[in-house]
Every structure is written in structure tokens, then in C-alpha cells.
Amino acid sequence: MTPTHRITRAAQLESLDDFRRFLKEHCAPHAGITAEILYDLQLAVDEACTNIITHGYAGMDPGSIILDLEIDASKIGISITDFGHAFEPKSAPTPDVDASIEEREFGGFGLFFIQQTMDEMNYRTTEDGNTMLLTKHIIIPTGD
Amino acid sequence: MKTEIKHADKCTTIFVSGSVDALTAAELGKNVAAQIARDHVNLIMDLSGLEFMSSAGLRTLLGAVKETRSHGGDLRIVSTNPGIDKVLKMSGFHNIAKVFTSQAEAAASFE
Image (cartoon, rainbow over all chains, first blue to last red; front, side, top):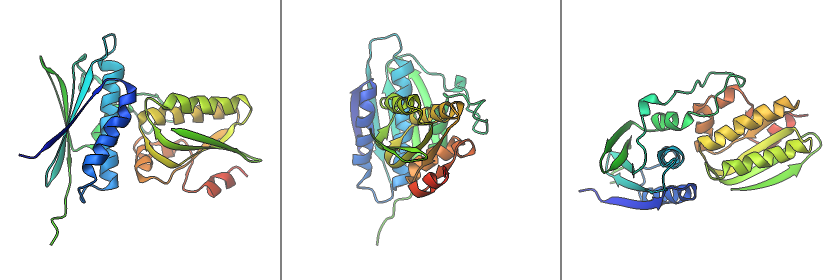
């Protein structure tokens, strides 16, 4: 079994920094996780958690966000669980990145960035909460 | 997030360090608004000391470009962090605003 690292924080914007630090701390010992891969992970998690904080718990008492991280030889798995309103990834608009500044919508980049930086994204809602599963493939040098 | 402002003859630079996320982006927006209110509409946002920026920061930059242009100025970016460059590129930001790799080039563009 690959060990799972976990952090649980209140669903508030002040927690975003804690999630980024958590990822940095646990990815640092792995030579195959480059600065670029770490940035991708931090960005995807930041966007997912921001959506949960601003939309998922809208109109509810703020709950928690549980972030689980698993790193093995070929991939990084992240699961983000919350207990707020379910999110419909398919209903989210795709931003037009070729639009001129006059036509630009200022929102909609969060999910788009998750899709652009992660290799897989799955979302499920059960009685036990909502979970977004993210996978990023990596090649970790085995050494001599 | 921390900001530092430097005024020159032709432009004003906002140096941004730390992280711009959904918590701190509004503060950056206020920094821009404060400069525009003082008629400093030719702005450089120097992100070379920035560690992290999410879509919330990007929204602030887009808003700042629109605001400066509506006042007859412009907002130009200095970016050297590959992660932040990627955020700018994924969003097509390079198509709507000028992005430089050094403060000197950005300042020269206002000469």
C-alpha cells in the first residue's frame, strides 16, 4: 500500500495556503516531482478548493475539506472531499481563451485549469460527501 | 501577498511577491485601483517575485488591463516564474496584454 498523506482544514480561503504548503512538503522528497509538476498540483487543488469554499458551502455553515495525497512510482493521486453542495463539472462553462479583452468573461478558469494540468479528473457524490479525484502521471528516476 | 510600488517618469511598477489566490486577489485589485485613482494609468505588474497565482489572480490582472485601458493607459506584465507563465499562457493572456521577461524591457515599452 502506498502511504496516504492527509490534511483536513476548514472550508475558508485562509486554508488555501495550508493546502499548497502540504503539497510542497510531501512532494519535495520525490526527485521526479519537478517544480512544474508541483505548480500544476498546487494550482489544481487551489482551484478545486476555491470552488468548494465559494460555491460548495454557499448558504451553509462552512464545513471542512479533506485532502488526501498518494504518490507512487508512476503517478500522484489526489482526492478532495467536502460535505457541501454537489458540483456539476459538466455544467461548468468552458472559457474562450481566444476571446478579445472586450469579450472576456472573468470567471470559468478554475475547472479549465484543473483539466489542463491534470491527466485525469473524476467526481463522485455519495451520502458521505463529494469527492474530486485527480491523477497526474510522473516519471520518478529509479537511480543506479 | 506583498506589494511594493515604484514610480518612474513614464510608468508605475507594482512588484508583487508571495501568493495571489482567492484570498489575496482582491487586495491586489485595490492596489491597482489606488494607482489609477492617482492618475497612474501606465502600470507594470512585476510578478517575478511571485511564487503562486491562481485563476483569481488572473481575473484581477484581466480587470486591471481593462481598467487602465479605459483610462487611456495600459497594464503590462513582467513574469519569470514558469508556473505563472503557464497560467498566463493557458488562459490566452499573452493575446490580450504584453508580457515581458524583465523589468527593463517592460519599462522601455512605455518610453
